[in-house]
Image (cartoon, rainbow, N blue to C red):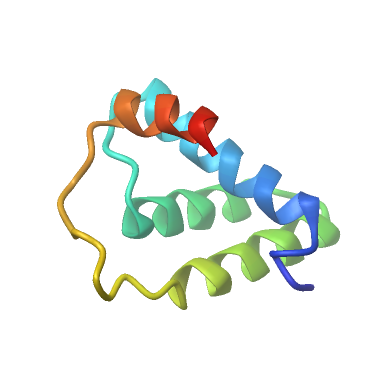
Length: 84
């Protein structure tokens, strides 16, 4: 699965981001990966577990070089998603 061409990958990452936001936690690559791991533990569908695994791998390979690694408050991250 290529996350860039698979809408399910974006949905899975969005679910993880929303879960973190509702818990009022910062949304960062590391926190998303951890949340995806938690989601996989409670999932019973092999297809969903595979999608989560692929999303985690994609996030793990995100190149953060040149991007400010500062933590962005969760609500600011959510509102900025609409700008894209």
